[in-house]
Image (tube, rainbow, N blue to C red; front, side):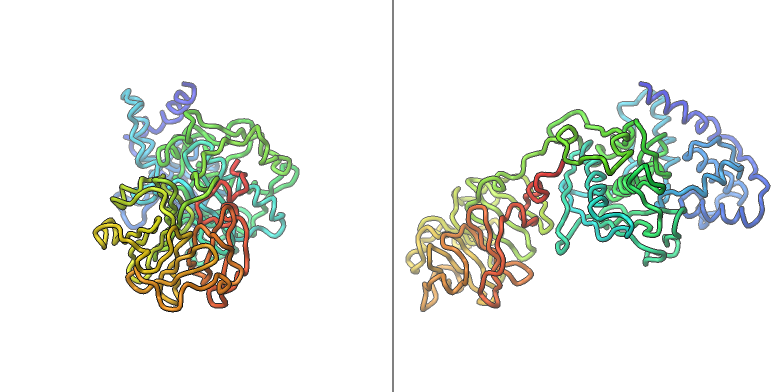
Length: 521
């Protein structure tokens, strides 16, 4: 209740002056006025291309709007407080639509329809949100005077701030893989246009792009700090603010909001205001499994170097990863778009190239007539058909439709019963079945074995017996799975080059909690 009263009191000047004539702009020097006009145009308050009123009236109205968003006395004049506010360090993203959106919301509150507030303009427009809840990120570089470990800790905490109050989950992508969100420090002009060029300490400290470009840029020459004992701009607050933009949030005029255009100071109050929380939940829903959001107080971060991100008291409960991440799978395959299909029992999961995994789906919903507990699966990269194997039977589907009409008896073509795994091998452009210490190459069509096979598994140098799956990868490797381990084989040399645990070391498998070593706190 107290927050709503504060909101109404803060918005009252807006409602009172909205219908009045604009007051004249104060008498200031021409150069100062031009700089103010450039500032107001850059940040979305003044549209120089649409002169709907005399220039003095348009400028005065733009100043009024800027003063209201900045919680200054609304006068429409370039007074000392307004000019000083324009010189404060801030976010480089424009404040477009803040005034109009809040006018609509305040009017709704006064009319008694608070439960049905229209919030459309406060959030990303259609198409400017992520249509998934598991997002990967990468820290491309960092300021030279700050240790990498401290910056990475600040980045993790900044993403966690948003996942604490929403259904979003984040994990750090490996340096060589794709990432949804990229955080980069630049100097000066960095091909974003001259209006977005960084100017060293002060001015615009950072800017970001709405989904789905997924980028946030920071001024590398700024005096960044992560400790209250040192002078400088708190990097954690700026990171958290710009990440909000990459999620689709625009600026908020709410007092003490993290998403206000001017970065908030750390204190004892919650880092996110009620408006920040409602904004991200409107886009992505509430935290999974909980109805109450976990807020982190600002005092936790006043001395960032002393904060333990792994503290059990501040660690949020993890939502479960897909069941196959904690046990095993029956079969696995990949299509031409690098989308994985993981099979276990009567269900399957689809995993996108960036590691985002779907909910489990029944096999019968996609491939009618396919039994549970299949033993091997492969997608032909020639025609996109799916091949499934179980016992002595095999199935071939083109999309959801069976190619053969019904299951076929594969052992008639000399193929093994109960194969361990299936693979489409690009160099041969053939399907390969693995069974114990042998492998079988199939002729086109999938029912007959090629001459001179089966052969011994020693041809695949270092691959163990009884693998549970095999996948071709875009980098020219073949990944073999058994239990909780994987082996990476160079398909040109036919020799294993690396091995490890797939759930924790292969982020594209969709085990995003395991990817972070369980540290999605």
